[in-house]
Amino acid sequence: MAAGLPEPEPLRVLIDALRGLPGVGVRTARRMAYHLLQHDPDGALRLGDALRDAVGGLCHCERCNSFSQTPVCATCENPDRDPSVLCVVETPADQNMIEASHGYQGLYYVLMGRLAPLEGVGPDQVRFAPLRDRVRDGTVREVILATNFTAEGETTAYYLAEMLRECGVKVTRLARGVPSGSELEYVDAGTIAWALMERRPG
Image (cartoon, rainbow, N blue to C red; front, side, top):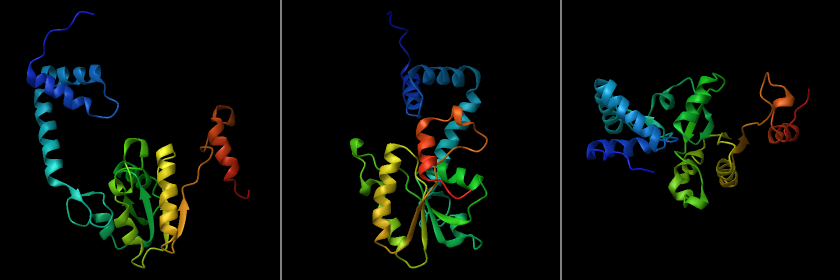
């Protein structure tokens, strides 16, 4: 295949930076870069400023480890939340999805990752110790493990369940099953298997 035109260094650096986003390959990154520079240079500058402000202006909440502008985030400071129930999620995006359900009124702990032994990510990298310390303070009565249903998420949930039960709290896991409104014919076999195992009285 013939090589393309050599790209100026700033353009190459921008493409490489965009490739760092999840799911973005070199062709998509190149399209994004050319679009921003050719059609929306003002948007490119706004994007750069927004990224700089977010990186410089956000910290991790001292209580839940999620992103915050203050040492303790608004969710953790909210007196209407139930401090006896703690939901553990992998990322702030997962936390936002649970909040969007409007069905949970407890507090959170955000791992900012998950165990991935094959990638060298262990308990120290995922910061399990602050979670254990928080659970030991006597306020938390139940911990809901809401990690993703991937191999890494399941490994993380298993490890956390073993660790947290030693703290004397109730440990539960998000239920898995057939989505509401779906037809069994179109549901994958693994989901049906979990739904059968976690069935409840009718």
